[in-house]
Every structure is written in C-alpha cells, then in structure tokens.
Length: 622
Image (cartoon, rainbow, N blue to C red; front, side):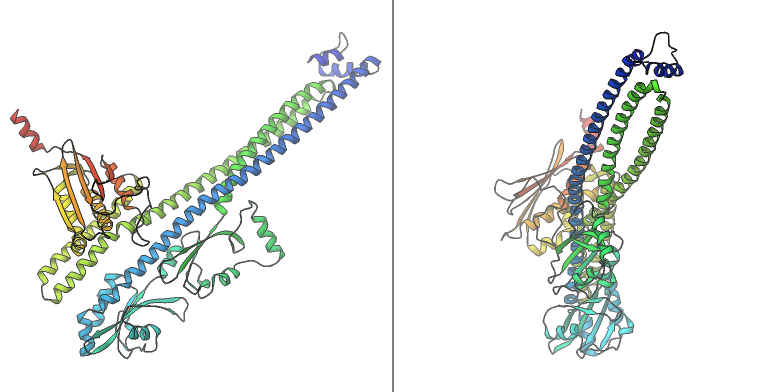
C-alpha cells in the first residue's frame, strides 16, 4: 500500500482490500477526509489531462515520422528500381541490335556465294535448298529463301515456300532496285510481323535473283514474357512491332495503353487509392501505376519502352513503416502500462486494482500477437528482397555472356569465310585447318560459359602450371585475323627460359585476348598501329601490353562494370572488369597507366611458379 492510501485509512483498519473499502466509506462522512478526496480527484484529473496531451504528442510525432519515412524511402527505392529497370532496358536494346547486326551481313555474304550464283545461271536448283538449310543452321536465322529475277522462290529452307511468287513483295522490289542490303518489316496475316533482310545477286549479265533472310525477333518477346516488366518496341513511325502483349502490335503506344486503363469514377478512385505513396506515375497499365522508361535502339529510329510496377517499392516501404509503427505501439504500450500501474495503485481504495490488471494483461497479449504477425510479414518481405537480388544478378550475367562470346563468334565468322574460299578453290586440306580452329573456338566458348558461372558464384576450376609463352601464342593465334586485317606491327619480347605460373589457362588467355582487343580498338585512329608485348620473370611474372593509341583518360572508372569509351554496340564495358576479377582470383593484379611516349600500358602481375626440374638442378649445383 502506498503512502497516499495510508493517509486515507483510519488507525487499526484492516490491511486487506475489503477493510480498505470499509475504511474509505467510513471516512467519507467526515469533512476532513472529504476535502482530501476532492484534492485527490483534482490531481487525478490534472494527471489525466497531462497524459492525454502527452499521448496526442506521441501520436503526432509517430504520424510525422511515418510520413517522412514513407516519402524518403519511396524516393530511394524508386530510384533503385528505376536504375535496375534502365539497366535491363539497356541489355534488351543491346541484344536486339546485336541480333539485327549479326544477320545484316549474311545477305551480303550469300550474294557472293558461287554455288547460288551458278544455280541461278544454270537454273539447276537441285542442291540449293540443302545448301540453304546448312546455312540457316549455321547462322541461326528463322528461314532463308532464294528467288529468281521474276520473284519465284526456287530454293528455301521452308519447303512450303517453294514455287511461291514474291514479285510484288516490298522486300523483293526494294532489293532489285538497290545495290545494298534492304531491311523490311512485313505484317503477317496471322498477327505479328516478319523481319527480313534481302539483297540481289548479280553477275556480269545483270541481276540473277534475290536472297531473303528472315530474322526471328519474336524470340525476344518470349524471353521478355518471363519477367515482371512489360516491354514494347516501336519503329520510326511509332508503331509497336515487338511487345510482351500480343494485342499491342500494330498500335501506337498511346492506343496500346488506352486499352489497359480502367474507365469510370469507381475505377479511377481505386487507382488513386492504390498510389498512396504519392509516387508520380509515368503511365497506367491494367489500372495500376507503372514506371515508364524509354531508350533509343540504334537501328532505323526504333525505340524500346518498359513499364515497371511499384509493387516491390510498396512492399519494401510498408515493411519499414510496419517496424516503425510497431516501435511506437510498443512505446505506447509501455506508457499505458505505467499509467495503468499508477492508476491501479491510486484506485486500490475502490478495489479496482485487479480489474485494471486484467485489462492490462489482455492489452499486452494483443500487442504481442500483433508483434508476431508483423514479424511474419517482415520474413515474407525479406524473401521477396532476396528473390529480387537473384533476378538482378541474372540480368548482369546475361550481359556478361553476350560480351564474352562476341570475340570467338567474330573469329568463327572469319574462319568460316576463309574455309569457304579454300573449298571453292579445291584446297580442302587447308580448309580442314580452319575447321579445326573453329572446333577449338567452340570449346573455348563452352569454357567461357563455365567460367562466367564460376565468376557469378565466386568459384573456379582447379589451377595447373601454365606456360606464359604458350598462353600468349594461343591468344595471338585467336586474334590473328584482326591483327592481319589491321596490319598491326607486333613486337614480342619473351625470356629464353620457360616461364610458368599456377593458373587456369583458359581464363588467363581470356584476359590476354581482352587486353589485345582493347589495344587494337585503341589504335583505330592511328596511321601506323603498333603493339608491344613484353614478358619479364623474377619473383613475379609481368606481362606488359603497350599500344600507341590515345592513352587512358579516366583511371577512376576504368575497371568499373559497364564503363566503356566505345561507340554503342561495340562493347558494354565488362571486359576490363572481368579481367581484373580473373587476375585477382589467380593471386595477381591488373594495373593500367599511360606510357611515357603515349599510348596505354596494361600489366598483368602473377606469382612465378618454379619448375621442379629447375629446383632439382639448383639443389644439385649447391
């Protein structure tokens, strides 16, 4: 019993609750005790008002904090989501342009094929279809067709097209009138578009016919359909030619979105209520506010747009706000608990202590149950964040694969062109050598995909002793076609003794090829390109690649992913970032500087591996 309750109790009054009530009733008839009770009631009312004001202040502070948190986190998470969406859009655009440019050169090569020209001259097409089928499997086109000068299909990978006449088709008419490769977009009757490259075949007598290549761009639609974003591609006139929604094709962007937006007062009210986070919506898709991003596709004025929902942003913001609300709820619970305790002690004379305690216990149980529910919600939110991180990693992996496979693919095209010329000149033995190199490149591409998986998981193959000279020779052999075409002067300085390092040869050659290719790109504007390769050995092995280009201007971002000084479509800025990671995994380091006489200098430093034979000879000499 507190001191205040003792002052209200008469002498020799029972100490239990029942006695306290009896004493209070007995003293309530006395003037002195009546005045005391009035003072207690006045104090209780004053305390009650102070508590109410304090609670209102706490609630107001909680509301302000939740509002500020909502605004700041919404902005932060929106920027993060926008950056990731921009990255995905850049990857989609790069893949699309890469596919188009890859097939743009095919009609020019097939227009020079002597077998097809001879077939058109002799009107003997018995083997032409089989030859086109071998080409379509090689280049990955949707279909290939050969037409004579009247537009009749004389050979095609799709045998249904044999004999059909395309004399009035735009791709045939434009190809006959042009001396270059013509790109055409044809509407299909079943829906969608057909994307083709066409070029005429000529000889000394004039035009012989037209070669037609169909590019399968709809595979990108199928790939985009597996993501949460909606994507569309428009041509120079603003017409949708590719989209994740089939109904969008042949419409403008405004018309496509108009079919997805709800109408009516009720739908608009629901849409505004959904945007409680006050994020300015770029567009509305199926009645939901979305973030619209647009990028230029460097091909005939095409543009690509993506629409990303704010659902993930709301989930993250709601998770943090739920934590804050839970914290304020706990604070209020503690305040109510303290007030309830004081009230229970003050009202002990009226036997309300037990009832107040029961109410307090029930309130605490509700707070605990609410807290457990919020913790379960947070666990679900954390799983969603982990899944989002995995999807972002897959986006970066796809960009790395596209970049790294470009080198062996370019070399394979060169070897295939050379093999065709050798076969046409009846030199099959030399052509077999080119096919052997192509087989090596296919093995290299498989190794590149395996090492990219290793790069993503921070793991790699087992290391083995690697001869630096052999690895450098293999890298130069892979770059031989580019070096021969550019007429680059190469100076190599290697030690007389064998230099060994402990490494993965395939990954080490990948780094060397990246440095050699960057050096070639840096000397494009130089009249007499020169390339110097120096290998020195001591406690560590140093491989130096020096060129006479313009040098390096930005050292801070040189090894950052997606940083590049090349033109759009020539690179995505992953070569040096991946090379630096490989060298670090091998226990060395990759550095860059500008030469004293100009140009860029890249150095690979790796620990030297001492050969066991050399160790035995050293011990025998001692």
